[in-house]
Structure formats: C-alpha cells, structure tokens
Image (cartoon, rainbow, N blue to C red):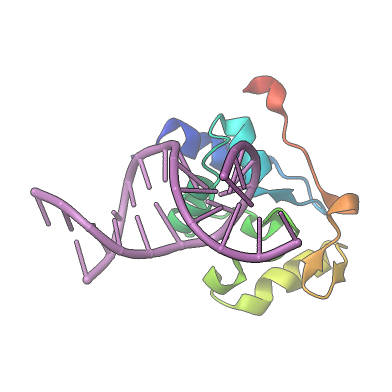
Length: 106
DNA sequence: TGGATGACCTACA
DNA sequence: CTGTAGGCCATCC
C-alpha cells in the first residue's frame, strides 16, 4: 500500500541527477510532510528492495546516516565517490552537490 | 491488540 | 548553546 507521500518520495529519489545528492528535509518539504522527515527514511527503508539511488539521500549535514542500512555500508560511499562526489571525512560537501527537487510539480 | 520503533527535522525553553 | 518535545504513520514483536 503506497501512501501519497510514499510515492512522492520514491519519485523524487528517482529524479535525483547523477552526481548530486539531496536531503531528507528537502524531500519531506517537497512532499508536503515538512514536519515529518522521519517518514522519508522510513519509506526508503521499506522500499530498500527497489532499484533507486538511495545513496544520494543524506541527512541535513550531508552525513551518510543510512549507510548501515545498506547491504554493504561502504557501498554507499563508494557509489557517491564513483559519481564524482567528494567527502570531508564521512560527510558530503552539500554546498557543491546538494540538489533541490522540482517542487513545482508538488 | 497496542506499544515501541525508525535512514529526521524544526521549534522552543 | 544544550536539552526536550512534537510531528508523522506503517511495521514489528
């Protein structure tokens, strides 16, 4: 059973361009659940089976908060690095790679 | 059946 | 600046 925001979250994640990342907060805001970014993480976790670039979704600070939920924790960083995204320690440089979803359609 | 939980964020004291 | 609370809702035990 997919809720409205669940579809939106998945759609948005699907639209994240190569070499960019976005945050739970942004997704939540665009989905109209600005006060519940929690649900975003929950949706991802529930749909972890689907082929989506979950590695491009990070928390507000650019930290890989969800790496432990991947089959291989290191995979998340590897994928991002493979897309040309650089890290400071284990934190993405959001100022360079943050992508804002198309909120015009929502 | 119901309470606890979760890849979070913002607001307020 | 630190700590607490609230919001959201399906899933798990």
